[in-house]
Image 1: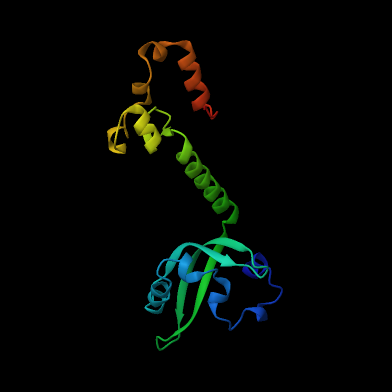
Image 2: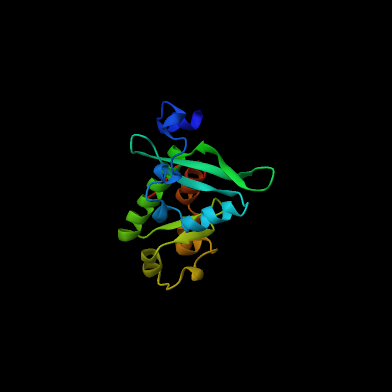
Length: 171
């Protein structure tokens, strides 16, 4: 019943007996190996993951789900039960963050580092501006390696790190 409400259906009769692709937006495009997905379920393998689902309104809802095959007493597949939770907001936020990262990567130098100051990722603009060619040359290095030694010793640098560790962004 909760799944029906999530997808905007009033009654289970609207979906019972219908092909599951009715609720899968562009299923073959969105789920890698769509047919393999169902073949594995047919072989008894539970499938888990994050999936887009088409709501009655035509909007997209994201679920984290486990699709479990159910068999009768002689071992024939009778149905599949899907146990799912709505992750639409989390998925939208992640997709927006990825889109922002991609937009930044087109125009700006970007470097990401952890709270210890170890570089965990960067883009090609950063590599080029720092005189490197491959990410492997900088991943794992301290971000301080790219600053002037005098600046690293300054109060301004210490305050900057305190703000960053406190969760403030810096551009």
